[in-house]
Image: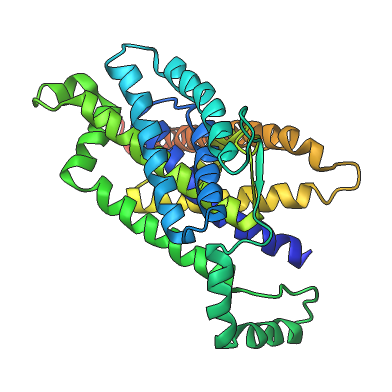
Length: 350
């Protein structure tokens, strides 16, 4: 059980970067961007291909982010300059990226029709390089001894991946928080709230939309590049339903932790991604479910995340109404009693 939760937390933190990208488009820009399903694989394909060709994993990951940024900008151009419906623009880019991703991964072979996957079993990745450094610190043994004293078994061989991703994800969160509070970030947020209003201040909303979509898909591609190095492979089908996972993370996090400030919301998105992966991992441990049911489980989690907050809010509203009604009745009874007592105490003429 502990090992399953540990693995889910590791993956959840990596997917949290993708969820932050989805948050920028769906919540900040109010743009239903389906490019995510394609740009996630693009990040994985670019990073895996460059690693196979011998490039440093850090450089390969950086290039993946840039390519993802460009893909998001193209979606923005299709919508703003091509006047294409935002949903359709995302779908068109997602479809185009499917073939592009096959071509990218096909560069590692002689195939003229592309390649659907790239294994990285013997390749050096960011995680394998960090593992060499982490193992010299000797921290794993101390942590595992502590959990062993608590009676926890099946401990992971290394905590380095978890530590690395916590630092990386928190750094990205801080950068996103800072950016959304800059002048450009505030303009992007205003564009998502009311385009007409921000245009009245002579702001170029087209540029802001393109920039927001580029940043979002850059983060998504970054997550895809990390997942490819974490899983030791890149596959053309790994991005299917990624937008649903991102939305589930955003919705779950917002429902549990709230959205009062930007810093709180981004933290809620990260926590939502981790909670989603833990729930999914525990669900797959049920005997009558297997890995083929992942999409069904995802759909159920998203449906629950959408319906339960509405049900909870409705119950809270009903309780508030009942409380206000009870207070009004109490006040009314108090007035009546006071009036009755006043009449009873009034002297009568004899």
